[in-house]
Length: 135
Ligand SMILES: [Zn+2]
Ligand SMILES: [Zn+2]
Image 1: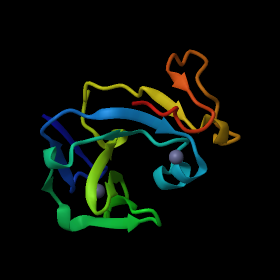
Image 2: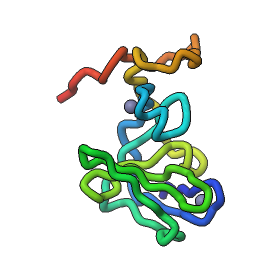
Image 3: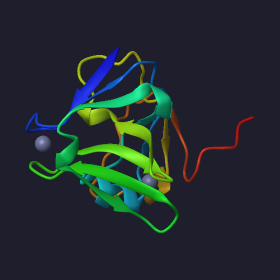
């Protein structure tokens, strides 16, 4: 069982299954959305995700293409990503402990911030733009 929550602790969730496809995106939109050098995000099966506390404190931003993000109103942590109004994934920064997954790839590295220095020891795949399509 994977659990997570926001900075102030009011909002909590759990994931009954595993996280999938952890990735970090360095594009300019993710920098704004995650207030960081990149996003760190993993997918969940919608049916395995449930809120445990503080759901009334969530506020939602929905972008043009049906993707959205949910935040804690009290502390501003970005907790989940939505697609078509359903939880699609979680931000890795708000997951508790070790969720048994690692970031498998860095995408849109070609759009990284001028101030970001990529770790020289990084062993994961880096892609200048989107990841190549996989079957
Ligand atoms: Zn909070
Ligand atoms: Zn991005």
